[in-house]
Length: 474
Ligand SMILES: [Fe+2]
Image 1 (spheres, protein in one colour):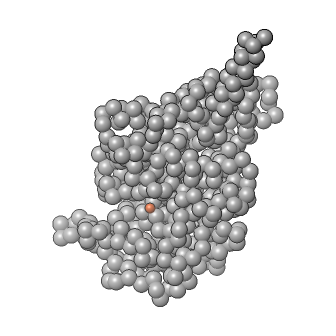
Image 2 (cartoon, rainbow, N blue to C red; image 1 turned 180 degrees about the horizontal axis):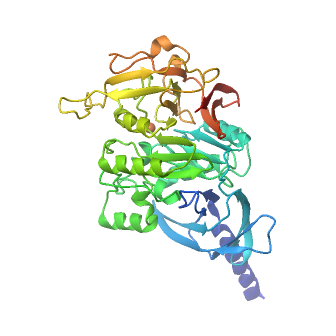
Image 3 (cartoon, rainbow, N blue to C red; image 1 turned 90 degrees about the horizontal axis):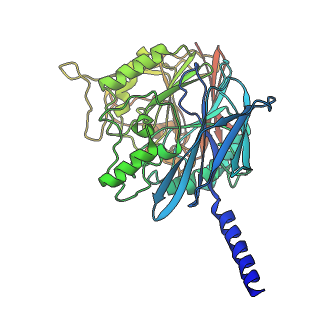
């Protein structure tokens, strides 16, 4: 009798441990997958569990066509960070139809444990997406912005870098990113279940590469673990580097597959919008032949009606913070030639919208551009379109540059908000009054909606109010 009781107790304990061990550390979320153009559509679903490996399967089907479910291959990576083992799973859903709703079911050992649905990419001209930057700081404002993005029902979200603070670590994604954008319910204090059904396109900011020395932080460069983005970019010795013992680097490369460093630069189409996402960290040379050629090929290949480039560090910034880092200005003449409509940046923790502008960097006697100071200031000649107001005059002459870095981290230079006299910098060949609007005392995100004829840009605050709005027509 005693033996029977012990056996029962052992059984209960074992069952309990097994139940607890199959815990999600990160709930399943949608990623764009490696499908840049509108010729093929994939999605990837990713989730992370704790130390006990599980035999997961994933089935998906077009909503309304339940009889024809397909199985997606599930792969797993064993991660060992900071003394803890976890498992990261990915399932790629291939050859999806465009403009369709899909549902998926995840099973563990044959039992359904999670399900969800998402829309595949659209080929239509009406696109709606949200943009935010500098967000994963674990703040109440981050949750409020996530909640307001959720209210807008965007088709996708673009994050302009500094995805998590301070060092782009896996543990920072787990505590300061997923809880806010992949929460179970929508709440102004907790965030919203955005990633459950909406793909996020992230790019590299400076904080995202701070953890590149794996000897110091073995869960660094987590961008390459948690994202599954188009692999159509270029990489050179100007791309981010991973450092550490050969064993740590080998393990990192094994667990990030071909995503490192390929996902440092990429582009994608969504409906009538084409977006190129670039790494703009200091190790990047914005005038490198590889970057310029890739950008030319990429933009010229695209038939999209609206062309957008996004990178973290703005070239045009009237804030005090990060004013000197201007190297991405050097790319402006190329972007103008390629007829880019809009540039979306972060890094500076506020909102700034430029007038439409063209910029001709000052050249050396031998005809090459140069960077004025060690800090990275770039002088040049500005041409501003002061007639554009985005309301009555909606045809910009030049590119509009947006800083949308108020997604959650503490704000920069709040005293500058609405006070153009305080935005000045000297000398004139380095700064002219190119900033049309600045909100630096409120957290905000950008909402962009397109049709064939018009692009509408709204800046929305943490309470859901539109604080700035412009329309752009061709
Ligand atoms: Fe930054």
